[in-house]
Length: 251
Image (cartoon, rainbow, N blue to C red; front, side, top):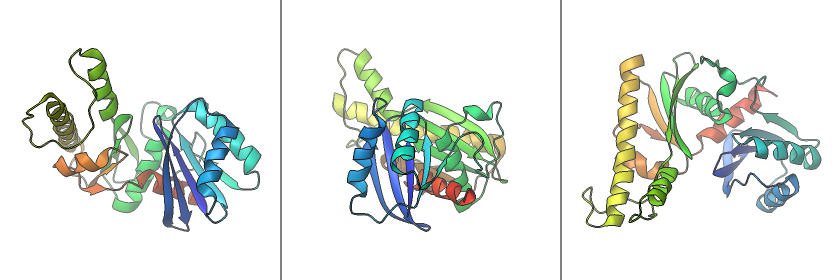
């Protein structure tokens, strides 16, 4: 069994693969202060009733957690083959940017997965702490993209800076025209971010031409997918699939 681990700024997502089939997955919070010993307690609890792990594929956007993950894997999984997406790892994704080392490991995994499933040119829209737009060419190259403030941190910032506004649940309101403060905030967030996605995708199309696919992923994707006119697929497991493919390339 292959264990895939995607460490994001807010959440850590784990997936368990039997060959190319995702058989189980979990989402936990990311804590940059967690130690290797604390991490293994979480992992053991989640994997308690699962088949033995024979391979691990990892990507992380949080350096402090990546350090502790390395120590955890060395101490508790010493005989398990481990692949970490970092400079020098074979991914099969040419990075056509000014500074390839700056590109997040999760964006590389997403690019590999979307090209494997849909070909190119394609765009991944990853709704996380930030909203990432990752552009992949018809040759599978990572061309770059756009980074926008994420939905949750935008709502949090608005609540913190505006005296009469507060944090609200990110759900679909009754209508675009909110009849109270809560629904007005929900309307602005949902339809505002859906419009942001459509606007950026349309500009990408203007720049590089028609796209094979626009794939949404990330924890906050489901609501926005329903309101966006340009998103063609919703694939929650996209990053995990990319991690699986990277592991296969480094066997």
